[in-house]
Each structure stands twice: as structure tokens, then as C-alpha cells.
Length: 402
Ligand SMILES: Nc1nc2c(ncn2[C@@H]2O[C@H](COP(=O)(O)OP(=O)(O)OP(=O)(O)O)[C@@H](O)[C@H]2O)c(=O)[nH]1
Ligand SMILES: [Mg+2]
Image (tube, rainbow, N blue to C red):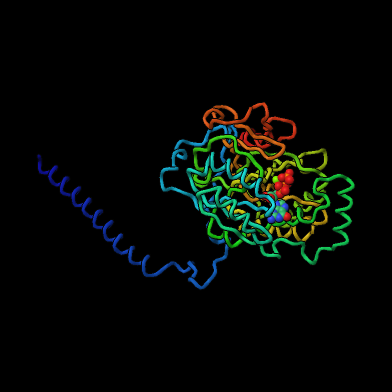
């Protein structure tokens, strides 16, 4: 190595050393400054920051769908958990009367046989009068799971005093003469209002996150060897149905205009990428509701959806209009509209795997799910693709590209 080269190398090393010292010092100097003296524009804990000044994270773009999510069967990881200790915070909820023992026994027998004898989810029975000893005795021998009997508080059940009874009675008479199912029944209206706005507030349900609504006199046709609650939790689903059909127009004449009013006064509460399109009928100059709704006699859902401020505000708005009594608004359309407004469309799930019957309609699983579930139903009885069903409208939500 020549003398000149030695000098050049020495200078290069000197330069590198200087850079390292500079980097080290700048780190050492700057770090404590950040720790001890925050920039002036960070608000102190007592000041509430102005919302527009806080950088909001960009919401993720809506997922692109090429097919409805239920085309993908329930993943294997949700099968076979019965022997493990993994359970969701969930209950099977049955609202019923004391005189419905045979129907309750029938529903429970099938649910136990097909699902719950392996999973032991607890039951919660609800009633506006105390359950009789006979009722309790009968259902207690129908399951080895735990169960509780709950009394509904009168304010959550009976027709409120502020309802104009004369107007309500006139509506009932009119519906009776129009042969509307349960058109003249006050208890049925109490039930619809309770299921719409109050069941999730019952003290016995406060300890749970998830519920499976079961009615007396329904059937389950297939083995359910997966845990639907864990599936919902794990896959970010919040409301699930097996049958969706059209509502009787005569029971909900002003429901859609009322919902439209709610939407225009509360645009900020409506979910991005929601499922409203499934419920809409686009005419030349207007958009109306096509009467589609999820049939709420079967529901598996997230109680937090109904407990949310948005849904409570929605229910209170509807309730204030008196339509549960001046018309006969059902809990099925109310839940459907609530789920469609406040959830992302893919958080609403269709359980193809769960074979189900409530008079007079059947959902019988299609495809490989039928054999896998050892289903005792025939695909020809399946309502999914028949005229009254809205499943095609649900599918369309996911076939448009987003
Ligand atoms: N405690 C109580 N439960 C009721 C009353 N009326 C209905 N229910 C329950 O509310 C749910 C819905 O009532 P259903 O009579 O099944 O109404 P529906 O499903 O629209 O009609 P059908 O089943 O076709 O009669 C069921 O779980 C009933 O057991 C009532 O007056 N008191
Ligand atoms: Mg029923």
C-alpha cells in the first residue's frame, strides 16, 4: 500500500467515525427531549381534543365478494369442539306461555338431539307471568343443561299508557275484518314489541353475549356438529338466519317511511357496506321496501347489536310512533331493518347447514351440508329458492362485485 493510499484510507475512516458519533449523539440528544417535553399541540388529559384535529384511521375499503359468504361451508375448526372446554358466552332463549309445554318439549327434544346434548348451552325461558311448577318440571327433564326462568317486567310487555287505545282498537278491528293473522290480538303485539326492543335487556341475559332464539313447536332436521356461536364469534358474524320471506303489507304500512325518516335524521349511525340494498325495491321515482325480512322465529345473534346505542335509538324512534299497536309491526321486520342498518352486509349470515322448520316453511340444507348433517328433510321442501323466499336478494348483495 502506498503512502497516498494510507492517507486516503485514514481520512475515510475518520469520516465514518464522525458520522457514527453524530448519529449516536443526535439520538441521545433527541430522545430525552421527546420524553420530557411533549409538543405543544398535544392536548392535556383534561382537554377534550377537537375531533377534526385527530387523524382518523382510514376505514378499510369494502371487501370485494364474488359469491355469498355461505357458499363457503363452516370451517373445520368449528367442528368437534364439543369435547373441548371452548364455549361462547351464549344461551338458548325461549319466550313462551305456560300452556305451550308440548311445543317447548318438541323444540327442545330436537335441539338437544341434534346439537345441545353435546354442547350443553344453558336455556333461558321468559314469560310475562310466572312459570308454573308444571312447566318447570316438564322442561327440566328435557335437558341436562342448566336453565333459568325469567319474569318479564310489565313495562317491557304491556301496551304503554300513552298509546291511544281507541285508535289501536280501531286498527285491530279493521285488521280482523281484513283477516290479517293475529290482526286483533293485543298479546301478539305485546310479544312483537318485547322481542323488538326488550328481550335483550332482561336481567337473565345480561351475562351473555350471544343468543339462539327458539320457539315452541319448531324442528331441527340435521346434526349440528359445529358450534354456531363460536363460528359467529370467530368469523365476525353478528346476526344469522335460516329463512327470509316477505312480510304481510297490511301489518307494516308506515314502517318503511318511519325508517326512512330515521335514516335521514341519523345518517351517521348507518353502517358502511350495509345490507339495505337487499330490502329495497327501486321504482321509477322512488325506493320502497320490498317486504323482505329474516324470519325471526330462528335467530342466532349478538346481543350487543341490540344493546348498541344505534339500535336502541332506532327502536325508541319506532316505538314512539306507536306502530306496534296502531299497526302490527312484527319483530322480524324490525330486527331485519336494524341488522341491515347497523351491520356490514357480511356480518349477517345465512346458515345453510342448519335444517329448520317453523310452520309452514322449511329450510333444508343444500349441497354437501345435507349428507354431512345427516338431515331428515327433503330438498324439494326447501323454501330457499321458492317464490316467497328472499334468499336470492341476500345473494345479490354479494354478486355485484363489492
Ligand atoms: N309469554 C308469552 N309468550 C308468547 C305470547 N305470545 C307469543 N309468545 C311467544 O312468542 C313467540 C312468537 O309467538 P308465535 O305465536 O309463535 O308467533 P308466530 O311465530 O308469529 O306465529 P305462529 O308460530 O305461526 O303462531 C313464541 O316463542 C311464543 O311462544 C304471550 O302472550 N306470552
Ligand atoms: Mg311461532
